[in-house]
Length: 490
Image 1: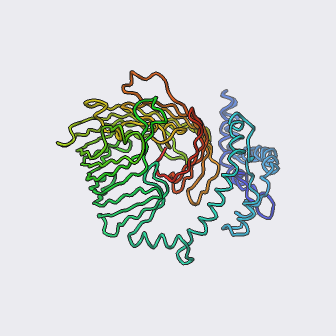
Image 2: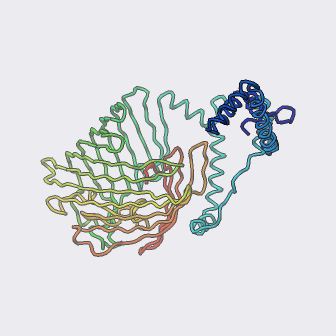
Image 3: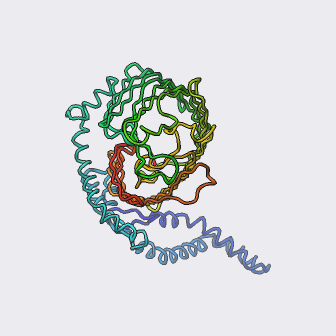
């Protein structure tokens, strides 16, 4: 309490003593006020005589008496006011710097808020997530234990040391995929001669990627010149339109040689322009299916010069390990065929994504995607470039690229629940239930109905990046289960 110091457990009224010691000065002022109280000439003369004959001592004594009476009235109240109860915090602080023992006493005495508030609607929605996804939580704790073993300090050895030694030397390994149907594989990137790089990747399904070039980064602006060869194996094609039958499925291989220049230019913190130009040579070979007997445009060798630009408005941010906010973009690309590929076409795209937090562990994620392609004719757009739905990200109960046509509309909503979090590794596992609506058509005006998918799944996020996705989806063509390594964000 202000004005009270503690010594040997007894209060000491230092301010009150200082107040009483100043009483003579206040007494003179009080006496002066008393003399001026009666303004009659007789009273004034009488008071003057009293001052001359008796001095100011009686007035000062009267002032002392007043302050003594005030002291008797105030002092007990001040002295008897209950002081704050002694706590381990106050005792530890009164003894000087906090020691480990006193810190333990302070920590033990802290009042903690209740671990859980009253039940609300969010808890009701959360409960089935906890029950169904409990095995994933156990997987998370197992992953945490494995990471703790693998990512040891270099002196302790382990896989973490091998990885760090490779990266420090200039060779970065990675595990993942090269595309939606690539299967799991591995890749190596040589950065030792930075800004030059060389990288190579292979997957279990025979996908391959070899590329090299130059990468420059100046603040938030980057430029890359690259060339290489890319093989996509075991791709599928069912025909054109939203009603293409499953019986029309064909399998094909797509080899692409390319030379590209890409870069991005930021405009402030929220706006970015991505641009690119290049040349590509495609060699498409059919392995099995109706395409062997009914050729479509795109088979064999085609050559294109292409340019693209995308304007991105990113108002998203990370908070408590969750993406929040919105981001959207618009873009376009043009393809001009060479002399032996007499065609040209354009693509226009729009994408919007938003994240609505429910609490620190739950959120609603929304996405909308629109594509339009125009050219000489639908038949003169190579079939492998057409917009498609089905796969890991769009209409998930259907096979990858199940339906193709010029235009596409896709909508997705997900309710996400964080099952497990490892704060030290900045990693987490989140479960989700989803609803997809999507379709393709020759023109947006021709759209009559959408196809739907519903299901549930989980994402494995390490170092703030999605490393693997698994889900079980249901739609008109049955159920589909998928597990894949990925680095695509949503």
